[in-house]
Image 1 (cartoon, one colour):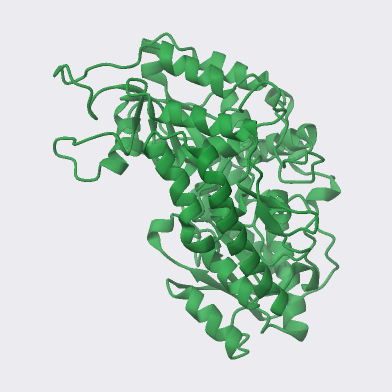
Image 2 (cartoon, helix red, strand yellow; image 1 turned 30 degrees about the vertical axis):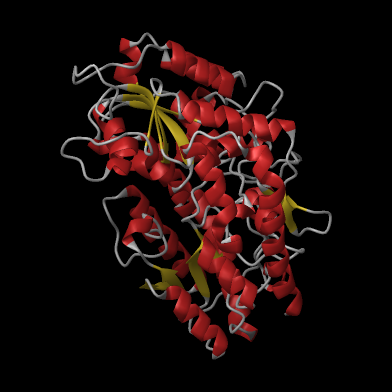
Length: 505
């Protein structure tokens, strides 16, 4: 197991070095990551130790004997995350075991015990601590919308004011650093310190058995990705021409029990828009949020996504699956059950579902990034469903305790890169079936190419802009151009209201 983890880490490092990203700095203005395919056969166990300063903390030799570091964690079982903050004992689960080893290493080296208060009411507790100047919690993990709401109120430090935290290091997600920095200030972080955002990262899964029966060569799909040719047009051509549709129940009617080329939730609009390198909300010249101007490219992307989502014989969608005998939850039936039972060739889903399927699904499957829009787009990019948390430091933590807090956060992040991240890769790639060598590359692209659209951080203006976009998809209405002027005006007003709240502080 140790050697396998070392190989995972070495592969991640090799891919990062060749791509120029892997969560690190990139010169690409859209924040996406170039594809590379390192030769895993050349990686040895000794290469797991890196001398790349981007992955090594610059922390001084300090210790904090008998000190305790307490996280406040927003706990909710449906989130499927934040299990990797702390654990009191080792585990047979490789990820939980890596958390135990990481936290033990921090205690052995720095004398600090990591603890966590897990509470579904964490947002209220964090707000109360802020209002009462209570420094019980060194740091807070909150779901992105709750994080942003409290950031507006001034509950958290800008990380430039947290000693020892170096947000330029590659173990911090540089997409988060770029996209969550607002007016030059950054109140929340994510990176190798937690796998939580990875759980909600979207991707395509392809059923190996169904692909084989349809003469779809999955290895050729990997090759297409590797050559940078995995585009939306090629993907849709495959959906239309692979003859996946099959009237499984023989009733001569198109219904939810039939076999399809593609199974999708409404989030396909967000995942495929992000895959095209587009955001609905971007930064202006002063580093504040503003609505993306409507371009011909963006309009065409949305129209193509609407076509794919409403292609009745290529795609089964949560909004058109209809009634399925014996099924009450047709949403999960569409995006989970059909994947598990092999009645969808491709499914747009997240990595959390993949982790469960590695051991629960009968039959093998492959993973692919969502397709780029066209050949002119240089890089792949991926979307994360906005249930992920961010890590913040309450402004009630001051003095020596603030210094220790920043130090331990940085130490945990650096240590997580060596322990938690490779363990997560192994868990994501292992299961009942042997993974092929391309799975490493696909997973690295998917996890190291995220872009974060501010539209999803917060319920801007009651969320009507998002709702109207989704209604276009589910209603098969190509009305973006007629709606955009009015909708973007209302959204910009909501963005300006938040700007005013930050300016008042």
